[in-house]
Image 1 (tube, rainbow, N blue to C red):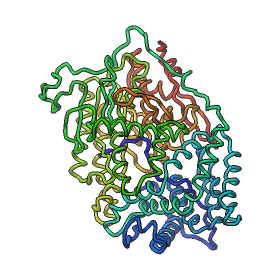
Image 2: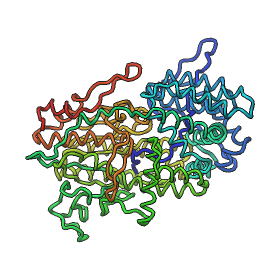
Image 3: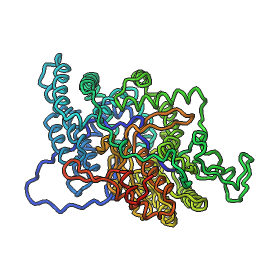
Image 4: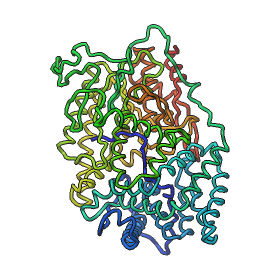
Length: 627
């Protein structure tokens, strides 16, 4: 049921999604309806005459979609007062993409100017409009010289940026461009839009994806090589990396005497416990591998923790079993590393291999590849999280709570019965944690009503758009209420949630569990190695920010690799909590939470936004527990 908040392999968020300035209208205007949550936004649908691929490629079919979508977006903006930045960027970004497809550079530049006023992340704010301005310049050149004119204009735009501020995002954008190809983009459309298109219509969310795919093929693709080359030049010209603020803040308990054991639950997609010998919770009441529920608690062979399958039924195995063999596992491991290397701007053999694969991929090959890589990402996620949570702390005792996340592009059909089964899974998992002395739980995952809405649409289920929205809300509320109730009912345990990787307000989207307001829960967002807010991180309900950029940890089997995401930020907080308890086992949840939040350093970013950066040394000072 749940979706892991892991950095995506390919997210078709085309770089051109920028807001626009709406022209002022003459005369008095009716009072707008204020939108406080994503549920309050209207749902629109768009006919699919033939197929999703034809909708992207056929001029007439796309024009009909564009006309209706543009009218709907402008009508919504006129009717509703939308204060959510992410939603405005989505609305205006789609309109901006439509303008670019039509060659209306003046409108596109207006959209870019507007997004600068909406954006509060300095790197994204600085980068806004660079592509549009270069395109507008190139449009005045003769067609035979257009690519060269664009390259020169784009180079001027990128070179003028404050590199220390935008370097991480430049590397990420270069890597994303190197992952895009017509085969990948059309494959994503076929895998993600086509199943829903079988009903004869698609939602606004999927219509946006169609627009972005068309934008890539018509607007970005002709200049893709020039953009990649310019970004590579600028990155190479600045060899100095951002300073790493985290090493000086780190607390290590290696070699410390008399540490209290601290049971840490990794509630995730599974953990390779073989890598953490000496750091494992052991259930003495259970006999290993006898296929018997020795304790009668509903779990078989729960020596180091428990597991649930995709339908929330108890199962065995604290590491998810892959559906493919060792050779494919090794291949997908290399491709995952290649993706991360590309996003980090590294020219490695793994990055080159993935670049070649993406360039040659046919649309019909994409879905199988994507699902294979997504399965490996789920397989590796919990182990990577555990390695971060336990770093530098011999006192950790990991207890695994394995859930099963769906890796398929068309996920399991959500039903009330499955939501109720997951509610039971959540309650029983938290109860298990309480029964076995867990002090702190890592939750690097989350879900929102939109997750259920999208899954219903992909399965052509749930009725019309408004009925689907209502059912999605019911599904979400059944799941989220049980989770929130379970956490609230375990006040002796500290829970740490990842804020999300969607660059959105997690309160507006009702992202669970990050948006829960509970005294025993901390939500962690992500910054980079210098403490600058990550472009991908969600915001809203956040207590602390921690490093979520290129954090190195274990993959199953023992190989180490960097991954990025709020999934990597949350276990940094868990790591600190566990260290505090290892040295001061008498501390209460309230005391540890206060030490973490109050010990964080305030940092002002952008135009007055203040975030709090995790500072383990300062938190130790607060509880007077220096090792």
